[in-house]
Length: 300
Image (cartoon, rainbow, N blue to C red):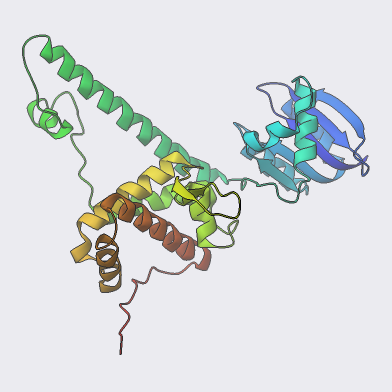
């Protein structure tokens, strides 16, 4: 069987398939399990398969690629405008088949098992930090009910109640925070070849100004905060630590930071530095080279 596009709406146990021919006409509506889907696509000739990026999509994308198909994943919010009339699983699959053909559609790279493992570690770490903070606040409130007041800051609780937080406070240097962000970035984007330029990766992470321009007048807002919130948080935390130790950095970077601090607010400098760190990381991943510190330009 030959198809032009196949849209797959993923469910927990049941998948809904809609196939379109070259004219855009629906020629297949099918409901099946994951095993039945892979058996069906093994003998299928289709130019393009589209799915929403969700739980299980990366595994299925790799399996379909092994069968020789071209597979593309899309963020769910970009597919929603193509859903017509009422919502149903088949209509969702039809919208996916329509959206995946758009030339301006943005796609999500299919992650390898190694990338997913790294991403899982960082997500578990993020959840643990959130829960640890919640426990500290709960301890403080319970002690307050008994007339015991603890100063703000988790470090004080760590010193006074070491048995409550087994691992204590992890004090990371600026360099270590940047290194911590690198594996998380690899887990999210791989070798970053899906992005043509470093600024495209920064825009995907939301560390660029938002824009609201009309009437020929450009108006830039705060950062867009799109994309992966956890990655953005890691890079901004790393940038904050690097800024605090700017005198220990390479001369080129230290001079650049000093110039920015002389004309704008520190928080703006932190975001600008995070943007630069993301671009550096993109260059390292794409070129597969060791990081080289920026050199201070000599003026004559």
